Length: 170
Length: 234
Image: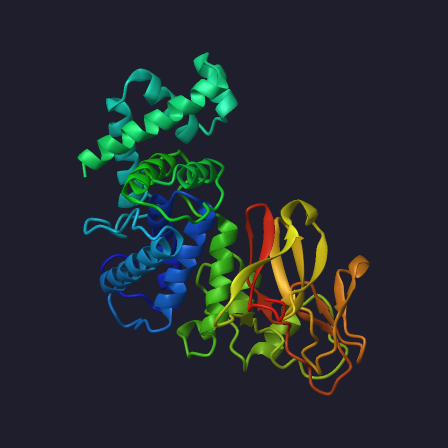
């Protein structure tokens, strides 16, 4: 049933893809409440008209198209600006059991580490502490031996620099 | 450039909260994109919660019950994660009587438990998220009544999860009263009672009234919110 085959029913479609769709959405919005809402929206939109007789690959392509529309709608509603989008190379194909998870989250991981590696030490450190190690501003400041106010400024500058690097690499 | 909106958005991301909307420009978007890239690379944060996966499964099952799906028949011999839950979901209306009898802990006093196992969620066409309580006020195990003008209901936090149901009896529309000690919603008119998840518990009617409709509920900005139509007061 999984892989190149066919899904026996919508529940199989759901079970096999919910993890992939969620990870994809999480990589695009970066927070759980929205990733959950958007995942729900994808399945609620996609499952009703879905022909289960389609092949697994076709079903995934269809879920991906739905996800693209749902994500675009989300940014339109919240920021009026398409901050992230599903790109042509985003896919639902990688097995969720893989250590690297889906292509989307692996990609986010890859791009994050590339950007971090290019940043000056102070910038790299503050972003690592805040975004990846879940440190509070106070904890991050303590770890770096700087004041909280300075850590805040540092984070702001580091993120701006990281944004420039990411934009250049896009 | 909206420095404040961007700053708040990033702070929300870092706290794992739902970011607040604002009107962003290109420069904001670039920073947010960087923040999202970094945040979603945080180890262990990319996988969905089990509760979410099961809940959505349930919602989908409720949405799709009108359609003839192969899943309507529970298939023995297939691995299932949660047989009790699956049993409820895999139940077609025709099979509801038997299945509900098997999974509901409280006995229905008499009558036919027609569609009581079927979940309905209120999805208003023009709804908005409306605050009914501060998050902090709705502690684990707590139940609160709310009246939004357009809908009334009860919201409860059980097992870390929020659930909201309509506060109107599905029989003839009397307002339900909360029996907090028994975790039950009682109808003053015909001695019907419902569980906090909307499930019919007891009744003395010839035909069992349906379960209470669910309302969409979420937590945002430290508040518990219900998705409901705008009230008469605006």
